[in-house]
Structure formats: C-alpha cells, structure tokens
Length: 135
Image (cartoon, rainbow, N blue to C red):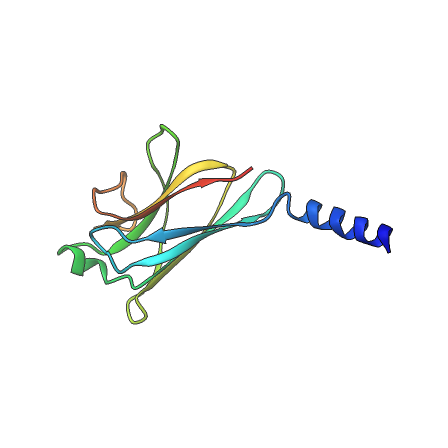
C-alpha cells in the first residue's frame, strides 16, 4: 500500500511539472463586455500552442467606423508587438478564436481592432491583453 501511494504521488508530481496554462482575458474600455482566455498547450519541447478565445465581442465597426478585424499580436518583454493572425470572428455569436504555435515562453498577447487583416503595426484600439509566462 505504501509503495503504491509513493508511486501515485510521484506520477502526479511528474504530470504537474508542465501543466497547460490558462490565462484570463478581460475586455478593455473599448469592449468592456468582452471576456475570454488564453490557453497554453505544450506541443513539444520547443513549441507551445496558444489559443485565444474571446466572447461578447461586438463587431469591430461598432468600436469605430472602418474597423474590420480583430488581430492577435505577441510581444516579448521590451519588444515591439509582432503580428500573428486575425481572430476567426463570428459576428452572430460575437466570438473570436485563434490558435498560434510559438517558441516564446514569456510574452504578452494583445488583441487589437484594426481596419485591415494584415496591419504592419497594432492600432491603439487594444481590446484585450494578457502576459504569458510558461516554463
């Protein structure tokens, strides 16, 4: 019985060394009702998969006339944000989702409202952001 208990504790400790991370996303003043999360899943030793999900996300043109997309950016601490992808946005359900592989371990996820699907830099219309730190 004692050996079995030690084995179970050891297995649970090993399994908890690299648990997937979940981080809350809360809307900014531009979209205060928006909420969601950033899920982190380990792909392999080098990469993790970041999945951004937002709910209660009004159509971009309701934030400001001319806006058409929600864009995900990653920025390493102290670095300029780098374009990742546009959220897959469902205007009927008012949800947005994107999955992005990365080798970054400490960075900030930002979602901005933009007037194009492939902007060169993020606008000032920050919808949500969250700092990610994974081992």
